[in-house]
Image 1 (cartoon, rainbow, N blue to C red):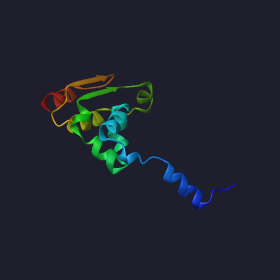
Image 2: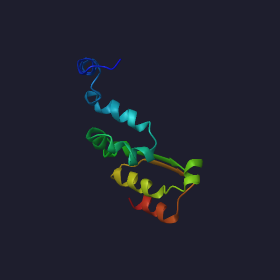
Image 3: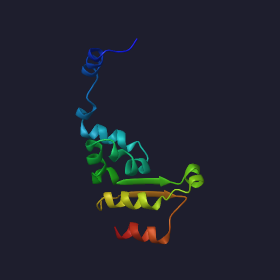
Image 4: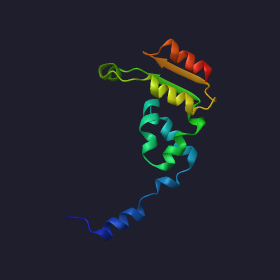
Length: 112
């Protein structure tokens, strides 16, 4: 049996508005994603997520490790790493990169 529009309206009224979630809680949830996902995908979800992903506080710690999937698909990890460093706006405290990296990337990290 197909749902009627009034049933859908009732369901929408009963469900929580995720955009009303406190900023800190939403940021905590987003931080559980990997750095690649936060840089590439999360900002595209909605304007609230985009704003949170641009907050330098999200980028005090950056962790990017090259996985088997990254090796197989030959993903470029230096670009999202540089984007995350730029988003930190000088507030970067700790960075962990593994399985990739060049002298130019290390120089980029140090100069930022």
